[in-house]
Image (tube, rainbow, N blue to C red; front, side, top):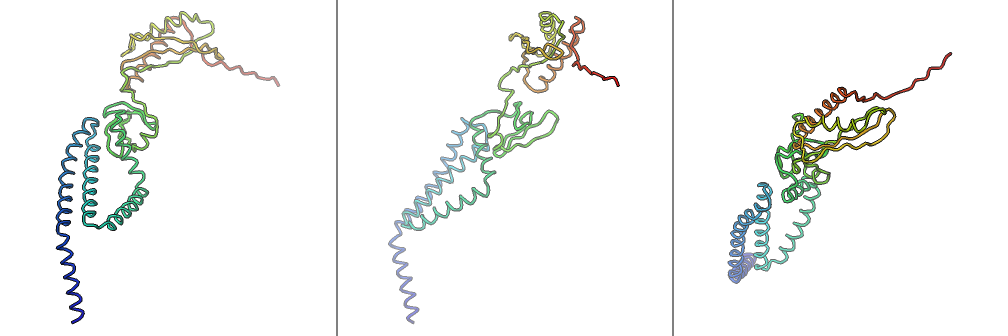
Length: 279
């Protein structure tokens, strides 16, 4: 009977404590419910605000959900504080810190890729359809996600590059500038008329498809080589993508070779002198 009376006393004490804390319990419940509804409202508002700065729908949804979760978590901690469960709050914070550190170490690369995807979304260094060169891969951007970027190379392969590598390494975007310069190196024989060589070469490249004539092509003589005088022909095209670049360079080589042949301008072979000793 003593055990029964002791248990009954404890139950009565708990009941009295519960009755005494009813206002705090109601306040804690109200705070939690308010935080839940506020998180939903702020999530919708933040998503609309993020759409003004980023066109990446996945990133915007992720950030909006993270904001909503933080508000709900803050509401939980506030409710526990109202109930005077300070030790519980401290334990939860300590546990969350340890768990967060463990998760961060275990998923370091995926987390870095997601953070890099968020950074790229706001910096906007490129868009889907741009022609880029990244991590020694050249092609057209086919897709961008939170974790990776997909490039379709000009030979038809899809290359998936983690966002971390895209951020950490140099990236060339050929689409941002509608123009691209081609530097074509060549050499002529020592007995050539250099002024005539310039005239013939500049006239030959006028047939190139996509030549940007507003920027005048230029010829720069570079060096006296072993068997030739070398020059660099620089000209601009209006199609910066790689196939157009290769086509323009190919046409320039054909047209210059044909023009040099017609004007008896020699592109010399490397000369080697072989000395044979008589036995």
